[in-house]
Length: 177
Image (cartoon, rainbow, N blue to C red; front, side, top):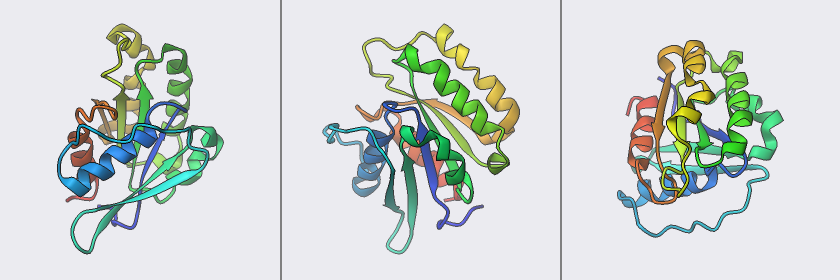
């Protein structure tokens, strides 16, 4: 199991919901519940936002949310990371192919060897979510071939908080908590 000093890295295309997911996880960990109201006023992340999620009085899980604009630098943040959450906006057909290409590239990097990875289909609450037939084009099976048992996929909404408790459970599992 990785040490708690190794962060969970959150990556994904610009506008996929990484910042809101980070806020939602921070709120969930601090309050113990999915609050209905959360500040959803976000701007695209240009750099790296670091948050510490308290596990108990002495330990934290560190998450590093790396902006989509920093895509060329993403591989450097994977070195030493405990795990990866890759966020995909399933309401934006125009970004699906580019997001898939970036994710599949990440999966082939040496830094991803044996790294727990969560492929998170975000924005499930959007009015026009892509049908499963289009999401299949993302080819998660190809990523599964590269990552093996280290790949988990799930659907969530950072905006309304649905399934964010499962994301937190996955994160705790990365550290064996």
